[in-house]
Length: 82
Image 1 (cartoon, rainbow, N blue to C red):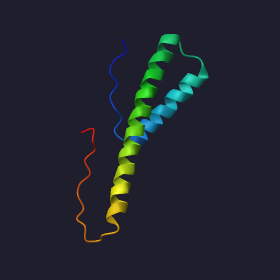
Image 2: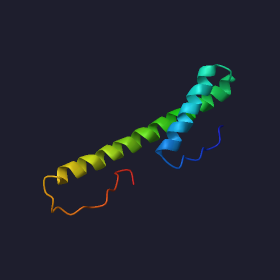
Image 3: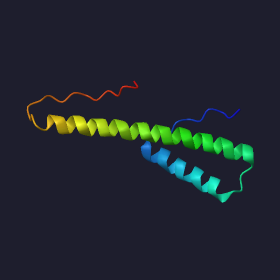
């Protein structure tokens, strides 16, 4: 069973790690079990990145909606997953 991977510090770090995984998988030099573990980690990173991008899109939408009312108070964004 693969050990739990520590989540990357930020979106850019996750993207960099995902790119490294893709490169290793594309090389075709990994044993099957290691390739499966790398693929599993890549899926986790892709999902994490997708969630981060969705949250960023929500924040932009909120800001654009409030653009019509310049006096509207800004509220901190709290994602649904927290």
